[in-house]
Length: 120
Image (tube, rainbow, N blue to C red; front, side, top):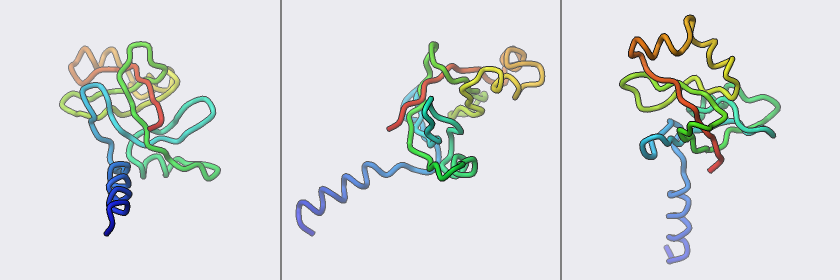
């Protein structure tokens, strides 16, 4: 294998994104999500995003970051590393909790997050 071929192989390996969400650093995760004109939906595992795909939209790799001004809402369960139940509408997020996320936080079950999502 020539030097150019090896460089191309290394580039492909470096760009390969795992199907599972991954912690990049504290407060940042690599996931998959469905792109839309106004942002993203259904972030998480690649197969999860694919299951909710409509009209031939394919999931893309994204970076999800904790950001107090973020336009997405998510939940980080206690003793877990990856946020779940990520929505771009606060009302949809809050519907996931019968008594609201504040009560779940008070009981020590996790914490609500504000997030941003950007394509890789």
